[in-house]
Each structure stands twice: as structure tokens, then as C-alpha cells.
Image 1 (spheres, rainbow, N blue to C red):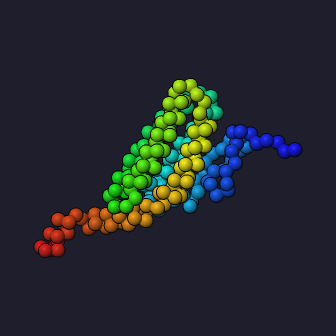
Image 2 (image 1 turned 30 degrees about the vertical axis):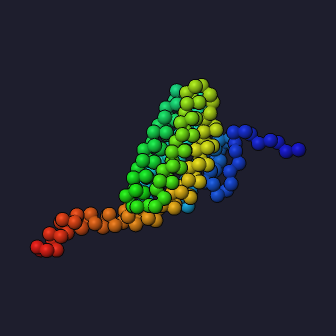
Image 3 (image 1 turned 180 degrees about the horizontal axis):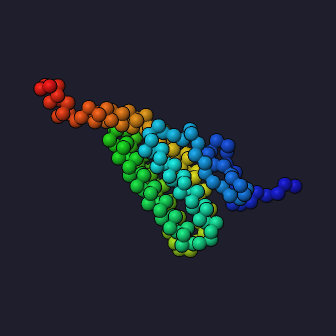
Length: 178
């Protein structure tokens, strides 16, 4: 007869990017290279969110509810800022599925807000929240974010080239009068 798994040590598929480190009951997220979108600023923001989820885990172990609440608030606020930035990039790049991607963000935001309210009401939701965050984030990056990444990269490359050469007026004046 086998021993039941500890309820706080969920099993994740090997390709999920979620690995155990140290204590078998301690689950930390480890960035996987296949999650890179090729957009440095977005990848940096995604990595920061992963760090914050790990910080939530570490803070939870301290048993200081106030500190856990602060990490949850910081994580939610940073994620909302990331979503706004990402949505602006998609719109600027003319990504055709921007509205659908934004709706995915809105549904996620509503779910996280519900966890936040449950936590503020005194419920212990941290394990459930961490599990949901990690599974949703890794899946979202690998699928939804990868879907827009090529179009946004191309847009950013064009934008960068245009600004290296100056704006339209500068280029036109140089072409006509130089």
C-alpha cells in the first residue's frame, strides 16, 4: 500500500516548468527557456511574476499573514500593470486577436480578485492561489502570449529601426535637403 501524497505537494508534468526544490512539500517555479517570447521586456515581466509567486510561497512559510497579504497585493498590482502594457503592445502591433487576449486577462483578473477577497476575509487560499497562478501563467505564456509574439516582435523591430533613423520629418528633411 503506497503512502498518499502530501496535499501541498501537487504533481506537475515534467514540461510544466514547475519543479520541487529541497523539501518535497515546497514547490517553487523555475523559468523554462521555452517560455521566452523573444520580447525582452515581456520576458522580464513574466520572470518577475514567477519570482513574485515564489516569494508568495516563501512568505507563506513565515506564517505572517500581513506579509502574505502584501505579497498578494504586489503580485496582483504588478500583473495588472503587465497586462495593460502587453495589451498596449498588441494593439500597437495590430494583433488581430487583441480583444480576445484582453478578455482572457479580464477573466483571470476576476479570478485573482476573488482569491484576494477570500484571503482578506480570513480564508486560507494561498496554496490554491499559488497552484492556480502557476498553472495559468505557464499555460498562458506558452499559448496565448506566444501567439502574439511574432507580430509584436516585428512591430518593435520596425519601430526601433524607424527611431534609429529619426522620425518621418527628420528622414524626409534629410532626403530632400541633405
